[in-house]
Length: 411
Ligand SMILES: *Cc1c(COP(=O)(O)O)cnc(C)c1O
Image (cartoon, rainbow, N blue to C red):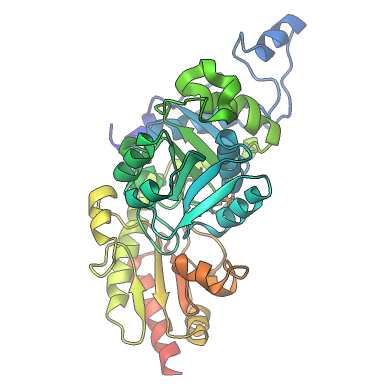
């Protein structure tokens, strides 16, 4: 089965008790049982069943199963947000005194979280470029996880997952990949060697900009050694499932960051069109980047442009796709604002992955709390405009951006 057919007819598409085509929205807090014995069995994990939505809910499970299938993973846990997913995944493998290796151009919220984790005694060693050489140099006996974004936002640096995971695995360390900006349409990190893949489902997986959510998907291939990963000590008997069992029955459940059932439903129906949307979004972004590339006075950064430093990676690991994010450097903050304000179709909003084209000036919004060094490490400058390309007609987007740029540069 190809991608779109898997989306609609894959093994994860279940038959529902009332013959519904879509999973019914179980918008309930709790599930009732006919006898105390039955509920006891559910709590003892001796029989399958739902008890309380923070711990499990059929609408959420329906979405989790599809994501596990799409990523080629074995266990998925949905969370209330992408940040909640990143938090739970890191706390499941790190205890006080442990270290994380991460790339410095991460999503701003993740950088802030890693700063918060310092107060819990979990230290992050940042590297400008997350490569196998960086892992070899920075890994030590305290390192518990290597964390990176498959396609960073907005710099569009691409992780060489096979070589990074190899270097990490040689040292008994797993690789966790945030693949929010890539989606399984573009690449499946687990098949490239990553151990755990994380998404903010709020972005492309939902696609309609109508529900915050996150997911953690475990490939169940990492051979956990609980002498090293002491955070998993009580889960030794689960072997390769130690991480996902600890996550589901311990950290995630106790932090309480479950996805709302109604959000799982919105995500479920959004996911149906992931392939269609990503195909159109990638094509639009490619056409827009090539159309704007030649305009004097600005510069354009997009993965499929020959000039992009990671251009070859797009061919090698991303099926030739560049994703939905491109950046424009306008020359100054004032010009960036003029261009943004002159756009007719692109909406000014702090989000990506919507099917509408969205624009923002990251330096004065998303990176307002960052130092200049942190900002530039993430590929954000005073004059950077970030565009999250949508599914409008490419011709209209090209005219809109060209007119806005020309009028701003004339002023
Ligand atoms: C948005 C985003 C997050 C955070 O997700 P939320 O759903 O907003 O909590 C994490 N990583 C990346 C790459 C993102 O784009």
